[in-house]
Image (cartoon, rainbow, N blue to C red; front, side, top):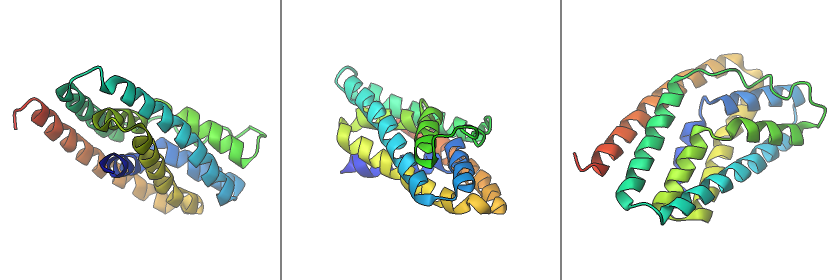
Length: 189
């Protein structure tokens, strides 16, 4: 159960203010259909998190517990640094596609989320807990939970600006968490 809760929290926090949330806001504003958008996010998140959890479970038996702790620390630091970076806008992706809200959301979300900090965190936590199914389920639920408000924010530009502030605060927390976990893994704390 620790794997489920930990990956849920890590994924939900990592998604706030992320480019995938901006993508969901853009797609929700374009299609104005919450159901297919949320379903597309869920399917894409599940696919990404299954891949990440499988990778984490695969390496779990190959490296020591200390190395896994360092991997988790690295994933947290990566999430923190990524939180400070402001990448390209993902909102334009899929704007010319004629595939409908569900398929467009699922495809775009999968592509934008692939190799993102959330996937890295999921792989690291899956390795730490050696819990493929729980890690994938927790991360998927966290991604969906974090993107539900994005669908509601589709028409509220000032609320989108608040996402940047939240993203920066969470970036600092991820960095601090990564440093603490790393120092603990190195037995310096």
